[in-house]
Amino acid sequence: MGSQNTIDEALSSYDRINDLKAFDEEKTGVKGLVDAETEGIPSIFVRSSKDRSKDFETCDENLSVPIIDIGQVGQSNDRTAEIVKEIFSASKEWGFFQVVNHGIPLNLLKKTIDGTRMFHEQDAETKKEYYSRDFQSKRVMYYSNHDLFNSNAANWRDSLYVNTLHTAGEIDPQELPPICKDVILEYVNHILKFGDHILMLLSMGLGLDPEHLGNLAKGKKGWSFINHYYPACPEPELTLGINGHADNSFITILLQDQIGGLQILHQNKWVNITPVSSALIVNFGNILQIITNDVLKSVYHRVIAKSVGPRTSVAFFFRGNFSSKKIYGPIKELTSKENPPIYRDFTIEEITTYFFSKSLGEFGTDHFKLQHPRDGN
Image (cartoon, rainbow, N blue to C red; front, side):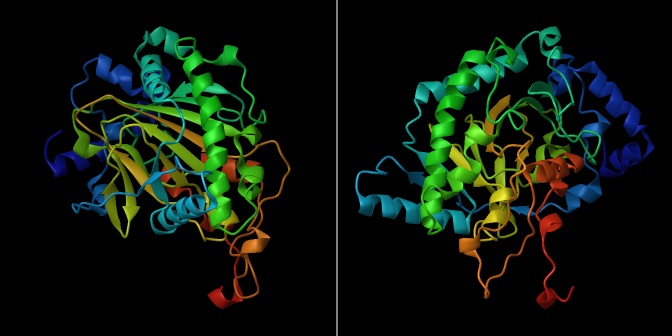
């Protein structure tokens, strides 16, 4: 797109709102631009020099999040305790870790990546039937950028979204796209069990009853499945796959292919999450940070755009039931007079509505903080 001055001049002069509407009305997403052999990337995806100047440095050191083998959980109390300690240590230091020997068939992981990629690579007219921005009532939808009209620059990705926040974890199989229906149902069945297993180990690490977090967050009370598709980008240095953000979840379980691009913010540097064959990535969302009163923290992460692709990932969010009136807040066992609650109470409906009202990078926990006298507020 030329020099930096030329780029910034172009960004200041174009009609962004009309361009966003035109892109959205096409209903073919970023994949549609690639199929049309668009030269360069449209201005709606270009980050200004001001935004790019705020980027943290990418860490060149040989750093990566811990890889934890949970295959021996349950074989003995001592070995289970050791694994709990590993998970809790990784949780405190990184907020992210990779899990191997998780019990989910490796051929299913491959089928899930391949099957969901096929959704995005099928005929555009077929995909259009699922295109929507109705995040409140639609249970299955396809879109590009949930915050398209709120962000400073659109991200180079399309998404397939399956949402059960209103239906207590139930999904009608007939609503799923036929091309990937069977593999989604099979994967969800396994990942719900795996997620409950991780929540049990986290509960133990927190000194709580093993079922405590599972009773609050387990999948049957509301979950979301999001498949992201990142086509190869002709100008990756000008945009991102996903902006830096924290998740709206208790925990998130991510399956990614081998292309890479995921980074987490660790000690004010971006650290690459190198793909590990057969591994699942676990990270914490803002809901878990609030209810553990900052013992466990959500971590900012992003996906960089790349000139190779497509990259495919599947994120599974344990989020709770949107329609439930249940009140959440810091767990009483984790607070005391010396360590008072940092956050106020909330419902899943409130935190989810707040999430969708913001651009991806703006969603955080500050909105839910209490004001303590010791803070001087």
